[in-house]
Length: 360
Image (cartoon, rainbow, N blue to C red):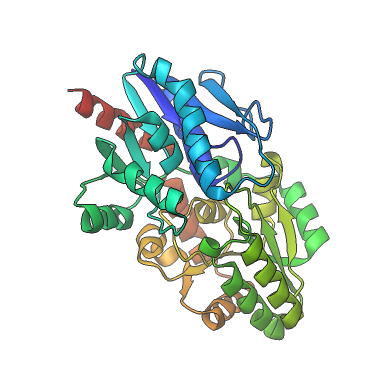
């Protein structure tokens, strides 16, 4: 089949990581795959090398200083649509991975990674169209599929994420040790500082954790985003100063540095208030790192007994303290067993079966 996978960015966010890994697995299964995306800020390629078997179409998208989120979203849709529409008919399957690319694609299959609740009018309208317009839907967990069924009466096909298990399970031990030498005993979170990631709650938990474990340090990686979280970041920084906490904010890290950074952590924190699967947390399990996460139905579904769960900053702090103190090889083994079951090959096979059923 000739398959177009559409994304909105070349930079490392969960949906983009998903798109590239799925594209490579589909190509390895013999499909003809092209990934379409917007090249923001002069980007001409993705944040990591992509298998040459996957064709890439990076559509230039210039920055406009001072442009608001709403106008930027509308312009993103228009630019991607303008480039993609003349070639859309050449594909057997058009599969959008987010609301921007779904609006640009028109008739398409859509993966709903999680259901958002936007207040910006343009974003809210984009989100709604991207759910009701596609003719078929994929969700990465049963919990998100249940949200689509309850909110829109949509029946989605559930195909869980894969994870690059070997990449994290076999992370360079020397590089992981170097991260530990640099940061000491560190709790890592990946995803930046933003409301959906529960960053303020994690900050409160870190302040409490330091009372029991003053040697522990919070390290925050990632944070590439289309949205403007400057107000939230300012509140976070003000609260950090009030608490006397000093987390280390790395921002986006090089793709090659991520596995040893994860593997070197003493614990991985995942306090998101909204998720569809939790790919970064699954990578931590693959690396054998203790995992503490917010107690959400979707995360219980995906991670089960392999993770520690909490609902409040105090609970997160307590579970992190336990994770730092306990030597629990059984839980580590259980975590790796969960991660190794989620392969991109299996995800690709299930996508191909879905595409073929839609074509027939």
